[in-house]
Image (tube, rainbow, N blue to C red; front, side, top):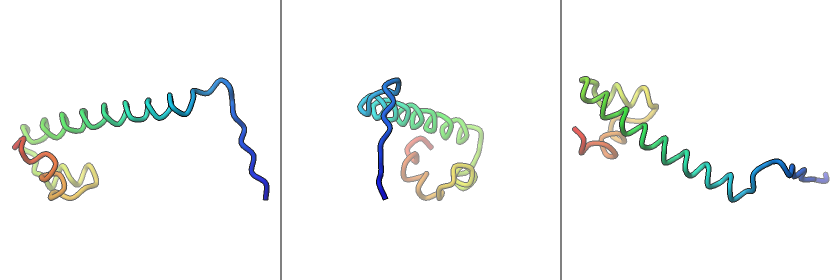
Length: 68
């Protein structure tokens, strides 16, 4: 089976795409942190937040526990 790669000149370079992904991951992590802090300030438990984010309460507490 022959594999061909069709490179579209209109697409951003691999470096630009990867840089954009890294930037998006940073922005998403910042947003997640703010949302977790907001949820905790409004009385949500680690278990409730974890359920919504699809992670264990232990993982959340380890990552964000210092915020309360």
